[in-house]
Each structure stands twice: as C-alpha cells, then as structure tokens.
Length: 84
Image 1 (cartoon, one colour):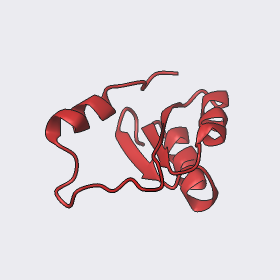
Image 2: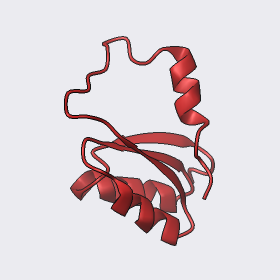
Image 3: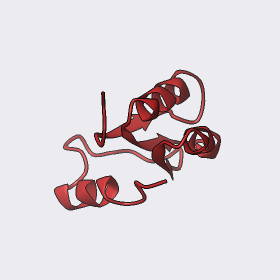
Image 4: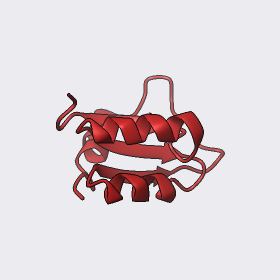
C-alpha cells in the first residue's frame, strides 16, 4: 500500500488524472492534485472517501524549470494541507 506516501498528480481535475488520484488516495497516499482546471471535484471525491489530499490550480501559462522546483519549495508543497 501507499500509506503516508506523498504523490503529486498532474491533470487531476478530470479523466485519467482524476482516476489515478482517487485510486492513489484510496491506497493511503497523501495526494497533491495539480491542474490548470480547478481540481476541487476530485478533492471532494477523495475527502468523502476519508482520503488525504489538497488541490493546486496553476494558470495555463505556468511552466516549471527543467531542474524542477527548488528543494525548499518541494518541502513546502509536501508538508502543506495534507490532512483531511
């Protein structure tokens, strides 16, 4: 199982991304839901099932540098809003 693992799912607002996020949460992961669309419906599905998640909505112009997020920002994302 994925108890207490922290996982970022992109495209989590609809479709395959939503299905993946819901399943990961069902298996015990703490899921960060990221999308350019509001992922609140996915968040509600997970919370109703007593899962752990939080939503991140990015503007459509958002781009991540090739090296990824700085370590301090990664720590902040993985430690914020992870409880039901």
